[in-house]
Length: 187
Image: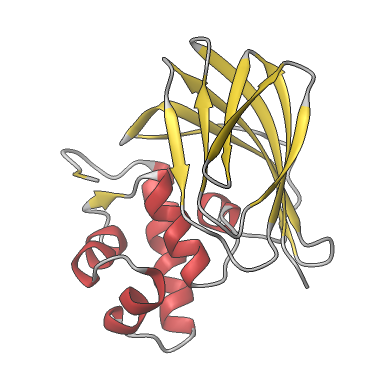
C-alpha cells in the first residue's frame, strides 16, 4: 500500500465509503475490525480517510474478515443491477485489472469477475471464508493457479475449480492472461 499523492480515485472512494459503512453499521471499532481482518488499525483508518489505497490482497483480507463480498467494495451497492462494466485498476497492483461482471447477489450467493494479469504478475490471496469456491475459466493466455501449495497451468478455454478457503494464487505465464472467476459463497 502506498500513500495517495493526489485526490483518491473513484475506486478508493468506493472502498473507503463501504468499509466505513460496514464497520460503523456493525458497531465495530477500528481495533475490532483490525482483529477480524488482520489489517492494522492504522491502515484501516488511512483507507477509510482515502489516504491509502489497499492492494487487492489487502482488500480480500478486509472482505473476508468482515464476511463481505469483494465486489461490494468496488460497486458499493450489491443489489443494483449492472449493465456497465468498467475495469477497476488498483494503483498498487498496476499489472492487475478487475472487471466486475456480476456483483455479489445474496440470492445466488456468487459474484463474477474478469481479471487480466500482465507482465508475468503473480497474485496471492489469503484464505476466504470456509466453503468459498472459485470457478475459473481462462479466456486468453496461460494461467498458473496455486492450490494446495502446487502450481497448475491452464491454457485458454480450460477451466478449474479452486477451493478458496485456503491460501491460493494466480500467475500470468505468458505476458498477458485474461480469465473469468465466479466466486461462490456458501449459504
